[in-house]
Image (tube, rainbow, N blue to C red; front, side, top):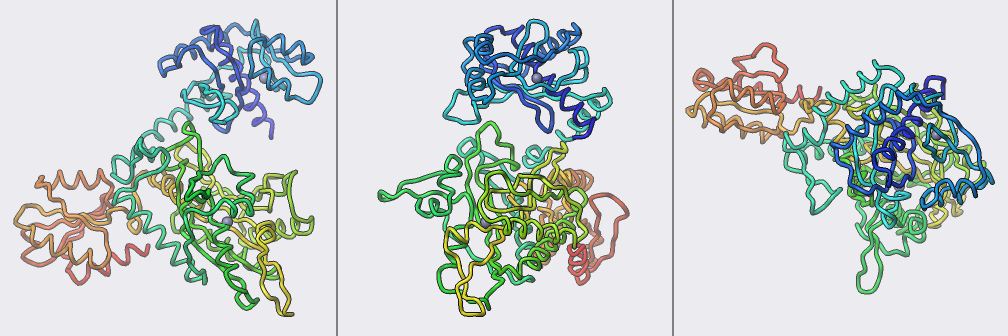
Length: 572
Ligand SMILES: [Zn+2]
Ligand SMILES: [Zn+2]
């Protein structure tokens, strides 16, 4: 962390203490748990005696300002675990935290009469915490485990300067306007029902966008000789025991018993892909074998963290697995990075994507040589494409290093999308092999890739990125036909059929509203292209077009030229 990042961290950490301090002054019976710093600010989880409502945030925020103005020095000391347990008497959470600390001494921070368990890193006194805001209350669980005590979280943010806070608030205001959940409703793209929290329903227009995204990816994959498969949605527990998911990932999986046997709904597509690879002997001639799947996976997420399309429980991965030899690894990774770059360029999001390589964690399997080879190959591929990246030291999966790509939503929060992972473990666990040139069994390397990542998440971020105004090729409705009066309805229908037959997502405005109203409504729904037809157009068998973003109308366009014209637009 650089100095400023460290300062901001200390400030937000101190603001979390200040929040807890204020809550205790207002609601003395509240039990404190933990209050960490996050990417966006900080939060504190409480076991309160009352349910915090949004109105209470203002009151708590005012109390925080009041305590801040007392200018209390913030001190950091150490005490024995026994004394700390006495200090937090009747708090089972702090008790659990203290007993889990390996040292004999624990850190305590104090400001006035308030004390908290803490490793330090503060501003000097409460008066330095000036520019902050409480943002939300939500539900959470102790240690994020829903079988534990339900808690209440208050989250907020703090900045070093008033300008930074003002900019954050401005961004937030704008982001609210373009929040994908709001636009999704307005544009009739998707909905989420209480009957299926975390499992979105895609309406015709939302499905149209997703289908276009899938078609684009499928096309890219076909160009590069991927072979598409599909694998079952539920698979026997024994398979998940072999893959290791049953031991490492069970809490996030959904199980169902069928005729006395337990099956899990797949949280990942990888084992299914391996079963296809292993379904018959494979020769080196088949390698690299690129197997792709648009696979629906289900992963349990706490209800408190579900967030529109960005964090869901059921989603589609544009998943693919490449089985290759060591000698083919570099070329395969280079190919994948090139596909990622083509993908991002098509959506116009290339400049906002942040690449990172996550390296070997403390607990891992595989040999030093394998890790080195995998990590070096990932670096080489990014370097060869001139793609800048950061290193996330020790953040790889236990079975191999990976590339992670983060994309930002309208609040500049980062969400993971693409991942490319080199895997030595699953081929070993499933005894995957091919017959090499010497006629011997050899274990291939497996590369996992999901380039949109979660299609739902990518779609959600695109809605915010475009502020609902999708480019022509991707728009849920590409063309709306606006007949000036009912007399043009028949001709409107003819144009509609022509465009639909040629694959353009087209609608006719049947509202009977005056033209100005029809234009306003098409612009409001961000339809990229309007076709206006009046008496003159019917007589001449031409049409007039208007673009979403204004500019001059183009009239006198004939029925022969409109289709090639739209095709050209869709290729842009
Ligand atoms: Zn602290
Ligand atoms: Zn995989």
